[in-house]
Amino acid sequence: MIKDKGISQLICISIYIVSFYLAYVLLPESINFIWLKITIWHLNATIFIYLGSVLLKNSSLYDPFWSVAPVPIVIYLSIQSENSILLKMLIIFPILLWSTRLTRNWVISWEGFHHEDFRYIDLKNTNKYKAEFNNFFGIHLFPTFIVNICLYPLVYVFINDVDVNVYLYISSIITLIAVILETVADEQMRKFRSDPRNKGKTMKYKLWRYSRHPNYLGEVGFWFGIYFMGISSGFAPLWLIVCPLAMLLLFVLVSCPMMDERSLMNRPNYKEYMDNTSQLMLLPPKN
Image (cartoon, rainbow, N blue to C red; front, side, top):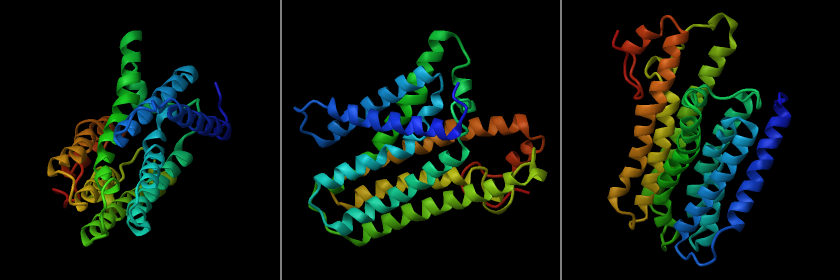
């Protein structure tokens, strides 16, 4: 097992570059609809990452894919578009900032291939066949599907002749505020955990006093910002609200409960904090 953090990350980056390149090369030339082409590219890359995780026996290889994959997708969309540079930057800049923030978290926190996310271990803690089913569909394919559909509203901006308007400015600002929120929440938690005196204690200060998962709130807000960008084009149908709602449900029904359950096991005072503090929204504590 590779234990060196630097070598592990270098291997991960190399696998990603090869995966994205091969996934692009394998795209059928007959596809005309740009989002179908992007979706196949996205899925093919996911399959290559999955094969790498099986080979390395560590599904945490997929971790940065969530934040890395949207970048080449949006850049590809912008290259195909004839819209103004300003319009493209109002969309691309918040996404690059979001991607940088999440990828930086991965660089800081991931210890290497000797470490695997506890959520992945839990999902694979079953019989051989079900574990591999969970690995492919639950850990790899499902998150890719969610990110893909949440990026879809952007198509309506890039494939149409859209002018920069006040709604796009507002949407871009919403995404930036969401990224700032989750960045501040992450830094507050990182500073709290860096103090040895806080080991085994619950972070319930600053943003974390009003929400058990303010970083996840920022993440959800980011994807709603992407939806509003699509709506700002004037071409996207309102029913595309299902895209960010899918992300909201993922966090409310899966990610937040899994983190809460782990905290209940490891922190004796977390139950009281959980009873008094909002799961996601920033709200005053009950007590």
